[in-house]
Length: 76
Image (cartoon, rainbow, N blue to C red; front, side, top):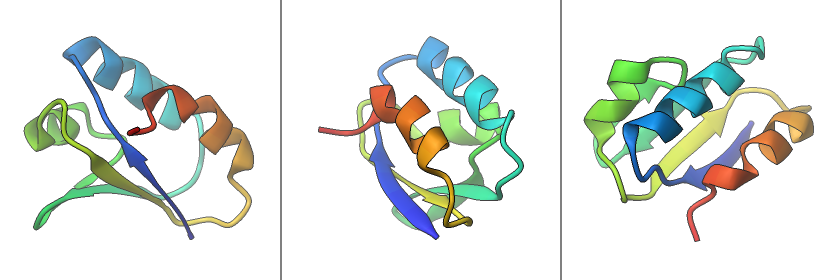
C-alpha cells in the first residue's frame, strides 16, 4: 500500500485527478477526517472539500508511475 497527501484548489483539479487515476487498475481511497471516499469518484472527492490536505491510499505496491503523475496535487 502507498499513501500520499493531496490538496485540490478547485473543481477542475478534481476532474483532472479523477481522469488520471481512472486509467489505473488499483483500488484507491481518499480520507479526510472520518470521511472515506473512492478516489475515482468526482462527487465523493468534492465532498471532502478544497484547500485541505486529503490522504490518498493506493492499495498496490508498484504504483510509482501513478505517484509521479499525481505529484502536481501533493500537499505541501
